[in-house]
Image 1: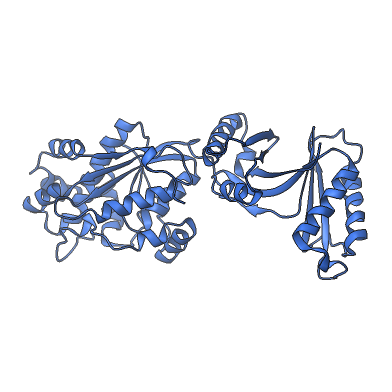
Image 2: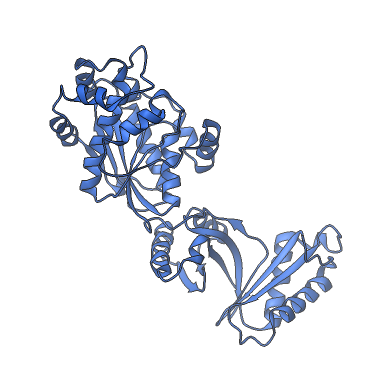
Length: 399
Protein backbone atom coordinates (compact mmCIF):
# COMPACT_ATOMS: atom_id res chain seq x y z
CA UNK A 1 0.00 0.00 0.00
CA UNK A 2 1.36 3.41 -1.00
CA UNK A 3 0.90 6.33 1.45
CA UNK A 4 -2.51 7.91 0.87
CA UNK A 5 -3.74 11.33 2.07
CA UNK A 6 -6.81 11.17 4.31
CA UNK A 7 -8.58 13.15 7.03
CA UNK A 8 -9.23 11.71 10.50
CA UNK A 9 -12.38 12.77 12.35
CA UNK A 10 -12.31 12.18 16.09
CA UNK A 11 -15.31 12.11 18.37
CA UNK A 12 -15.89 14.49 21.22
CA UNK A 13 -18.25 13.61 24.07
CA UNK A 14 -19.79 10.94 21.84
CA UNK A 15 -16.76 8.80 22.73
CA UNK A 16 -17.94 8.42 26.35
CA UNK A 17 -21.42 7.17 25.45
CA UNK A 18 -22.26 3.67 26.63
CA UNK A 19 -24.55 1.05 25.15
CA UNK A 20 -26.37 3.51 22.88
CA UNK A 21 -23.17 4.81 21.31
CA UNK A 22 -24.03 3.05 18.05
CA UNK A 23 -27.10 5.28 17.66
CA UNK A 24 -24.97 8.41 17.99
CA UNK A 25 -22.41 7.05 15.53
CA UNK A 26 -25.10 6.36 12.93
CA UNK A 27 -26.31 9.96 13.16
CA UNK A 28 -22.74 11.21 12.89
CA UNK A 29 -22.03 9.07 9.83
CA UNK A 30 -25.20 10.32 8.15
CA UNK A 31 -24.19 13.95 8.80
CA UNK A 32 -20.68 13.38 7.43
CA UNK A 33 -22.16 11.83 4.29
CA UNK A 34 -24.46 14.87 3.94
CA UNK A 35 -21.52 17.26 4.21
CA UNK A 36 -19.76 15.35 1.39
CA UNK A 37 -22.88 14.41 -0.58
CA UNK A 38 -21.59 15.74 -3.92
CA UNK A 39 -18.33 13.77 -3.70
CA UNK A 40 -18.73 10.45 -5.49
CA UNK A 41 -15.14 9.49 -4.69
CA UNK A 42 -15.59 9.72 -0.90
CA UNK A 43 -14.68 6.66 1.17
CA UNK A 44 -15.30 6.48 4.91
CA UNK A 45 -13.51 3.94 7.09
CA UNK A 46 -14.79 3.49 10.65
CA UNK A 47 -12.28 2.78 13.38
CA UNK A 48 -12.59 2.82 17.17
CA UNK A 49 -13.58 6.42 17.94
CA UNK A 50 -12.34 7.63 14.55
CA UNK A 51 -13.65 8.12 11.02
CA UNK A 52 -11.03 8.14 8.26
CA UNK A 53 -12.08 10.00 5.10
CA UNK A 54 -10.35 9.62 1.76
CA UNK A 55 -11.34 11.27 -1.51
CA UNK A 56 -10.08 12.63 -4.81
CA UNK A 57 -10.85 16.09 -3.46
CA UNK A 58 -7.89 18.13 -2.22
CA UNK A 59 -7.15 17.26 1.40
CA UNK A 60 -7.66 20.90 2.45
CA UNK A 61 -11.17 21.02 0.99
CA UNK A 62 -12.08 17.70 2.60
CA UNK A 63 -10.84 18.99 5.93
CA UNK A 64 -12.76 22.28 5.70
CA UNK A 65 -16.01 20.45 4.97
CA UNK A 66 -15.43 18.05 7.84
CA UNK A 67 -14.92 20.95 10.27
CA UNK A 68 -18.56 21.94 9.71
CA UNK A 69 -19.91 18.61 10.99
CA UNK A 70 -21.31 18.81 14.52
CA UNK A 71 -20.22 15.94 16.73
CA UNK A 72 -16.58 15.99 15.57
CA UNK A 73 -14.07 17.22 18.14
CA UNK A 74 -10.81 17.01 16.14
CA UNK A 75 -10.16 17.15 12.39
CA UNK A 76 -6.73 15.84 11.51
CA UNK A 77 -5.09 15.72 8.04
CA UNK A 78 -3.02 12.54 7.84
CA UNK A 79 -1.27 9.99 5.70
CA UNK A 80 -2.50 6.40 5.64
CA UNK A 81 0.64 4.24 5.41
CA UNK A 82 1.64 0.55 5.54
CA UNK A 83 2.14 -1.12 8.92
CA UNK A 84 5.93 -1.07 9.06
CA UNK A 85 8.13 1.13 11.30
CA UNK A 86 10.15 2.20 8.25
CA UNK A 87 7.10 3.40 6.33
CA UNK A 88 5.81 5.25 9.39
CA UNK A 89 9.09 7.07 9.97
CA UNK A 90 9.54 7.92 6.29
CA UNK A 91 6.00 9.32 6.10
CA UNK A 92 6.53 11.43 9.22
CA UNK A 93 9.68 12.96 7.70
CA UNK A 94 7.87 13.55 4.40
CA UNK A 95 4.98 15.37 6.11
CA UNK A 96 7.34 17.53 8.17
CA UNK A 97 9.23 18.53 5.01
CA UNK A 98 5.93 19.45 3.30
CA UNK A 99 4.68 21.37 6.32
CA UNK A 100 7.83 23.16 7.47
CA UNK A 101 10.36 22.80 4.64
CA UNK A 102 14.03 21.94 4.82
CA UNK A 103 14.99 25.50 5.74
CA UNK A 104 14.13 24.91 9.41
CA UNK A 105 16.51 21.99 9.84
CA UNK A 106 18.81 22.49 12.79
CA UNK A 107 16.69 25.24 14.34
CA UNK A 108 16.40 24.96 18.12
CA UNK A 109 13.07 26.81 17.94
CA UNK A 110 11.37 23.72 16.50
CA UNK A 111 11.17 21.31 19.41
CA UNK A 112 9.09 18.21 18.75
CA UNK A 113 7.55 15.11 20.26
CA UNK A 114 6.18 11.89 18.79
CA UNK A 115 2.90 10.61 20.24
CA UNK A 116 2.32 6.99 19.26
CA UNK A 117 -0.83 5.02 20.02
CA UNK A 118 -1.67 1.44 19.10
CA UNK A 119 -5.37 0.76 18.70
CA UNK A 120 -4.24 -2.65 17.44
CA UNK A 121 -1.68 -4.38 19.67
CA UNK A 122 -0.15 -6.89 17.24
CA UNK A 123 2.21 -4.30 15.80
CA UNK A 124 5.87 -5.44 16.15
CA UNK A 125 6.87 -2.43 18.31
CA UNK A 126 5.31 -1.07 21.49
CA UNK A 127 4.00 2.50 21.44
CA UNK A 128 7.14 3.73 23.22
CA UNK A 129 9.45 1.88 20.81
CA UNK A 130 7.58 3.19 17.76
CA UNK A 131 7.71 6.76 19.09
CA UNK A 132 11.46 6.41 19.70
CA UNK A 133 12.02 4.96 16.21
CA UNK A 134 10.17 7.80 14.49
CA UNK A 135 11.74 10.39 16.79
CA UNK A 136 15.24 9.23 15.91
CA UNK A 137 14.52 9.62 12.18
CA UNK A 138 13.19 13.14 12.75
CA UNK A 139 16.27 14.05 14.82
CA UNK A 140 18.57 12.69 12.11
CA UNK A 141 16.72 14.61 9.38
CA UNK A 142 16.06 17.95 11.09
CA UNK A 143 18.23 18.09 14.20
CA UNK A 144 15.35 19.41 16.30
CA UNK A 145 15.41 18.96 20.10
CA UNK A 146 12.89 16.63 21.73
CA UNK A 147 10.42 18.19 24.19
CA UNK A 148 7.83 15.76 25.53
CA UNK A 149 6.18 18.38 27.74
CA UNK A 150 5.25 21.30 25.49
CA UNK A 151 6.68 20.74 22.01
CA UNK A 152 6.14 23.18 19.17
CA UNK A 153 5.48 20.29 16.79
CA UNK A 154 3.69 17.02 17.51
CA UNK A 155 4.00 13.98 15.26
CA UNK A 156 0.96 11.77 15.84
CA UNK A 157 1.14 8.07 14.98
CA UNK A 158 -1.94 5.84 15.30
CA UNK A 159 -1.68 2.11 14.61
CA UNK A 160 -4.81 0.33 13.37
CA UNK A 161 -5.43 -3.21 12.21
CA UNK A 162 -4.74 -2.66 8.51
CA UNK A 163 -2.81 0.61 8.40
CA UNK A 164 -1.05 3.34 10.35
CA UNK A 165 -2.13 6.98 10.32
CA UNK A 166 0.58 9.65 10.57
CA UNK A 167 -0.12 13.36 11.01
CA UNK A 168 1.67 16.52 12.12
CA UNK A 169 -1.23 18.94 12.65
CA UNK A 170 -4.79 18.91 13.93
CA UNK A 171 -7.68 21.35 14.10
CA UNK A 172 -10.69 21.75 16.34
CA UNK A 173 -14.09 20.65 15.03
CA UNK A 174 -17.57 21.82 16.01
CA UNK A 175 -17.80 19.42 18.98
CA UNK A 176 -21.14 18.59 20.57
CA UNK A 177 -23.47 15.69 19.80
CA UNK A 178 -24.42 14.60 16.26
CA UNK A 179 -27.43 16.45 14.90
CA UNK A 180 -30.55 14.31 15.23
CA UNK A 181 -29.31 12.18 18.11
CA UNK A 182 -31.38 14.07 20.73
CA UNK A 183 -34.68 14.38 18.84
CA UNK A 184 -36.43 17.15 16.89
CA UNK A 185 -37.19 20.77 17.76
CA UNK A 186 -38.81 23.77 16.10
CA UNK A 187 -36.81 27.03 16.30
CA UNK A 188 -38.63 30.38 16.48
CA UNK A 189 -36.36 32.29 14.10
CA UNK A 190 -36.37 36.08 14.03
CA UNK A 191 -34.07 38.18 11.91
CA UNK A 192 -31.91 39.17 14.88
CA UNK A 193 -28.66 37.84 16.31
CA UNK A 194 -30.06 35.68 19.10
CA UNK A 195 -32.30 33.02 17.57
CA UNK A 196 -29.83 31.76 14.89
CA UNK A 197 -27.19 31.33 17.59
CA UNK A 198 -29.75 29.53 19.79
CA UNK A 199 -30.49 27.22 16.85
CA UNK A 200 -26.81 26.43 16.45
CA UNK A 201 -26.43 25.71 20.17
CA UNK A 202 -29.49 23.43 20.01
CA UNK A 203 -27.98 21.54 17.06
CA UNK A 204 -24.75 21.08 19.03
CA UNK A 205 -26.80 19.28 21.68
CA UNK A 206 -28.01 16.83 19.04
CA UNK A 207 -31.36 18.38 18.11
CA UNK A 208 -32.56 18.22 14.52
CA UNK A 209 -34.08 21.67 13.97
CA UNK A 210 -36.80 22.99 11.72
CA UNK A 211 -37.59 26.70 11.67
CA UNK A 212 -40.59 29.00 11.82
CA UNK A 213 -40.40 32.70 11.06
CA UNK A 214 -43.26 35.12 11.78
CA UNK A 215 -43.49 38.13 9.49
CA UNK A 216 -45.61 41.27 9.87
CA UNK A 217 -47.23 40.74 6.44
CA UNK A 218 -49.44 42.14 5.02
CA UNK A 219 -48.32 45.31 6.86
CA UNK A 220 -44.59 44.82 6.30
CA UNK A 221 -42.48 43.93 3.28
CA UNK A 222 -40.59 40.70 2.59
CA UNK A 223 -37.22 41.83 4.00
CA UNK A 224 -37.46 39.82 7.22
CA UNK A 225 -38.39 36.68 5.25
CA UNK A 226 -35.34 37.15 3.02
CA UNK A 227 -33.16 37.36 6.11
CA UNK A 228 -34.74 34.22 7.52
CA UNK A 229 -34.02 32.38 4.25
CA UNK A 230 -30.40 33.54 4.34
CA UNK A 231 -29.96 32.57 8.00
CA UNK A 232 -31.34 29.07 7.47
CA UNK A 233 -29.12 28.63 4.40
CA UNK A 234 -26.12 29.51 6.53
CA UNK A 235 -27.17 27.13 9.32
CA UNK A 236 -27.82 24.35 6.79
CA UNK A 237 -24.04 23.80 6.70
CA UNK A 238 -24.47 22.05 10.04
CA UNK A 239 -27.60 19.97 9.44
CA UNK A 240 -29.27 18.11 6.56
CA UNK A 241 -32.96 18.35 5.65
CA UNK A 242 -34.03 21.71 7.09
CA UNK A 243 -37.44 23.27 6.52
CA UNK A 244 -38.35 26.91 7.01
CA UNK A 245 -41.99 27.84 7.69
CA UNK A 246 -42.94 31.48 7.11
CA UNK A 247 -46.12 32.65 8.85
CA UNK A 248 -47.72 36.10 8.25
CA UNK A 249 -48.93 37.40 11.60
CA UNK A 250 -49.61 41.10 10.93
CA UNK A 251 -53.42 40.79 10.84
CA UNK A 252 -53.44 38.83 14.11
CA UNK A 253 -51.26 41.51 15.73
CA UNK A 254 -53.83 44.11 14.72
CA UNK A 255 -56.55 41.96 16.29
CA UNK A 256 -54.68 41.94 19.61
CA UNK A 257 -54.26 45.72 19.49
CA UNK A 258 -57.95 46.19 18.68
CA UNK A 259 -58.84 43.94 21.64
CA UNK A 260 -57.11 46.45 23.93
CA UNK A 261 -53.73 44.83 24.57
CA UNK A 262 -52.05 48.15 25.38
CA UNK A 263 -48.87 47.63 27.39
CA UNK A 264 -49.39 43.85 27.11
CA UNK A 265 -49.15 43.94 23.30
CA UNK A 266 -45.62 42.50 23.05
CA UNK A 267 -46.19 39.73 25.62
CA UNK A 268 -49.58 38.89 24.11
CA UNK A 269 -48.24 38.59 20.58
CA UNK A 270 -45.31 36.51 21.82
CA UNK A 271 -47.84 34.18 23.45
CA UNK A 272 -49.73 34.01 20.16
CA UNK A 273 -46.51 33.21 18.29
CA UNK A 274 -45.66 30.48 20.79
CA UNK A 275 -49.16 29.07 20.60
CA UNK A 276 -49.00 28.86 16.79
CA UNK A 277 -45.48 27.40 16.91
CA UNK A 278 -46.65 24.78 19.39
CA UNK A 279 -49.42 23.62 17.04
CA UNK A 280 -47.02 23.58 14.09
CA UNK A 281 -44.40 21.67 16.11
CA UNK A 282 -46.91 18.92 16.93
CA UNK A 283 -47.73 18.58 13.24
CA UNK A 284 -44.03 18.28 12.40
CA UNK A 285 -43.30 15.73 15.12
CA UNK A 286 -41.07 18.14 17.07
CA UNK A 287 -40.71 17.57 20.80
CA UNK A 288 -39.69 21.09 21.89
CA UNK A 289 -39.55 24.73 20.86
CA UNK A 290 -36.28 26.69 20.81
CA UNK A 291 -36.03 30.47 21.28
CA UNK A 292 -33.22 33.00 21.52
CA UNK A 293 -34.45 34.44 24.83
CA UNK A 294 -31.83 35.87 27.18
CA UNK A 295 -33.03 36.64 30.70
CA UNK A 296 -33.58 40.37 31.20
CA UNK A 297 -32.18 41.39 27.81
CA UNK A 298 -35.39 43.16 26.74
CA UNK A 299 -38.66 43.94 28.47
CA UNK A 300 -40.46 40.88 27.09
CA UNK A 301 -37.75 38.64 28.58
CA UNK A 302 -38.23 39.41 32.25
CA UNK A 303 -38.88 36.37 34.42
CA UNK A 304 -42.64 36.91 34.69
CA UNK A 305 -43.03 37.58 30.96
CA UNK A 306 -40.99 34.51 30.05
CA UNK A 307 -43.11 32.39 32.38
CA UNK A 308 -46.36 33.71 30.93
CA UNK A 309 -45.09 33.18 27.38
CA UNK A 310 -44.07 29.60 28.17
CA UNK A 311 -47.50 28.76 29.56
CA UNK A 312 -48.94 29.20 26.04
CA UNK A 313 -47.08 26.07 24.88
CA UNK A 314 -47.78 22.43 25.62
CA UNK A 315 -44.19 21.62 24.63
CA UNK A 316 -41.08 22.57 26.60
CA UNK A 317 -39.40 25.79 25.47
CA UNK A 318 -35.61 25.48 25.34
CA UNK A 319 -33.57 28.67 25.77
CA UNK A 320 -29.91 27.90 25.03
CA UNK A 321 -28.92 31.57 25.45
CA UNK A 322 -30.72 32.26 28.73
CA UNK A 323 -27.51 33.23 30.55
CA UNK A 324 -25.71 34.88 27.61
CA UNK A 325 -25.16 38.63 27.36
CA UNK A 326 -25.33 40.48 24.03
CA UNK A 327 -21.57 40.60 23.51
CA UNK A 328 -21.35 36.81 23.93
CA UNK A 329 -24.22 36.27 21.49
CA UNK A 330 -22.70 38.53 18.84
CA UNK A 331 -19.28 36.91 19.18
CA UNK A 332 -20.86 33.49 18.65
CA UNK A 333 -22.88 34.81 15.69
CA UNK A 334 -19.68 35.98 14.02
CA UNK A 335 -18.04 32.60 14.63
CA UNK A 336 -21.02 30.63 13.30
CA UNK A 337 -21.34 32.92 10.27
CA UNK A 338 -24.80 34.41 10.92
CA UNK A 339 -23.64 37.79 12.27
CA UNK A 340 -23.39 39.67 8.96
CA UNK A 341 -26.83 38.45 7.88
CA UNK A 342 -28.44 39.37 11.20
CA UNK A 343 -26.99 42.89 10.95
CA UNK A 344 -28.92 43.58 7.72
CA UNK A 345 -31.95 45.90 8.07
CA UNK A 346 -35.44 44.41 8.02
CA UNK A 347 -38.99 44.99 9.26
CA UNK A 348 -39.34 43.01 12.49
CA UNK A 349 -42.90 41.88 13.16
CA UNK A 350 -42.41 42.53 16.89
CA UNK A 351 -41.92 46.25 16.14
CA UNK A 352 -45.01 46.50 13.95
CA UNK A 353 -47.28 47.56 16.82
CA UNK A 354 -45.14 48.87 19.65
CA UNK A 355 -46.97 50.48 22.60
CA UNK A 356 -45.44 53.59 24.23
CA UNK A 357 -44.67 51.47 27.28
CA UNK A 358 -44.10 47.72 27.38
CA UNK A 359 -45.18 45.78 30.45
CA UNK A 360 -42.14 44.31 32.20
CA UNK A 361 -44.38 42.38 34.57
CA UNK A 362 -47.48 40.58 33.42
CA UNK A 363 -49.88 38.25 35.19
CA UNK A 364 -51.79 35.23 33.89
CA UNK A 365 -55.05 36.92 34.87
CA UNK A 366 -54.33 39.98 32.71
CA UNK A 367 -53.47 37.88 29.71
CA UNK A 368 -56.43 35.54 30.17
CA UNK A 369 -58.82 38.51 30.16
CA UNK A 370 -57.24 39.91 27.01
CA UNK A 371 -57.19 36.61 25.14
CA UNK A 372 -60.79 35.91 26.20
CA UNK A 373 -61.86 38.68 23.83
CA UNK A 374 -60.55 36.67 20.87
CA UNK A 375 -61.08 33.21 19.45
CA UNK A 376 -57.48 32.06 19.77
CA UNK A 377 -57.98 28.63 18.22
CA UNK A 378 -59.50 30.18 15.12
CA UNK A 379 -56.75 32.82 15.02
CA UNK A 380 -54.00 30.20 15.16
CA UNK A 381 -55.68 28.06 12.52
CA UNK A 382 -55.86 31.06 10.16
CA UNK A 383 -52.19 31.77 10.74
CA UNK A 384 -51.13 28.24 9.88
CA UNK A 385 -53.41 28.09 6.86
CA UNK A 386 -51.25 30.77 5.25
CA UNK A 387 -47.88 29.23 6.14
CA UNK A 388 -45.28 29.06 3.38
CA UNK A 389 -42.89 26.10 3.54
CA UNK A 390 -39.45 26.22 1.98
CA UNK A 391 -38.19 22.75 1.07
CA UNK A 392 -34.68 21.44 1.83
CA UNK A 393 -33.80 21.43 -1.88
CA UNK A 394 -34.30 25.21 -1.99
CA UNK A 395 -32.04 25.58 1.06
CA UNK A 396 -28.81 24.32 -0.45
CA UNK A 397 -25.81 25.05 1.79
CA UNK A 398 -24.40 28.53 1.36
CA UNK A 399 -21.10 28.69 -0.51
